[in-house]
Length: 118
Length: 112
Image 1: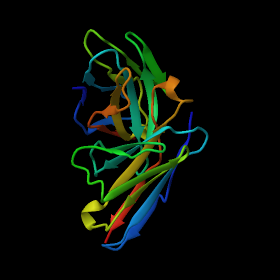
Image 2: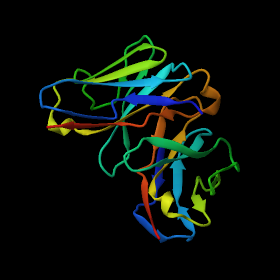
Image 3: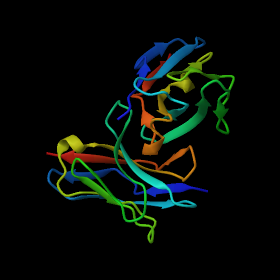
Image 4: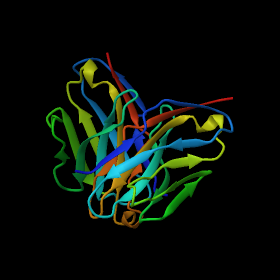
C-alpha cells in the first residue's frame, strides 16, 4: 500500500513557540491531505482538509490562524501550530489520498506526531 | 448526516478467545466501510475494508461483512492473541465523498 510519513514523531516545545509538522506521501502524489487531532483514548477529530495548491478547508471550531496548513506540493503538507500552549498538546495524524489511490477509496495514514507543550 | 457507532470498550479477553466488535453506520448512498487498527503510540493502519453490500473484508484472521440490511460491519476474529491488543476504529467513506467518518474506537486488551 501507499506510504505516508510524518516528521517529527515527537516534539516538546515551550509555551508560545511555533511547531511545524511535516506530512509526506512517499510513493504517490497526494492531491488531498487530511489533518487529524487525537486526544487520549478518543477518536480522531478532523481538523482540516488540504488540496495541493489551494487553501485548506478547516472544520468548524478549528482556528485557522492557529493551525496553519500548507500543501505546496503533491508530496508534502505541513501543519504549523503557532504560539503553542499546553492545551495544544495532542497527537496529530495526517492522511493522504491521490489519483493513484482513489481506486482504493481509502486514506493512507501517517504514524502521527506527539506534541507536548510545556 | 453520516455517522458510525461502535461498541464501547474496553474489551478484555483471554488469549484464543473469540472477538466481536460491533459497528453500525448511518449513511446515504453506498458507502465503503473500513476497520482501522491503532497500536499504542502509532498512527492508524487499515485492517480490512469492504466496498459493497455482502462483501467480506478479511486480514490477519480478522473478518467483517458489509450488511446493508442491518447497516452493520461487525469485526470478528476466531482466536485473539496478545499482540492484537490495540484500539480498533470502524469507519465509512460515502460514495463520492472525500471525508472518512470514524467511530469512537474500541480498545481491546488481550491477556495471556
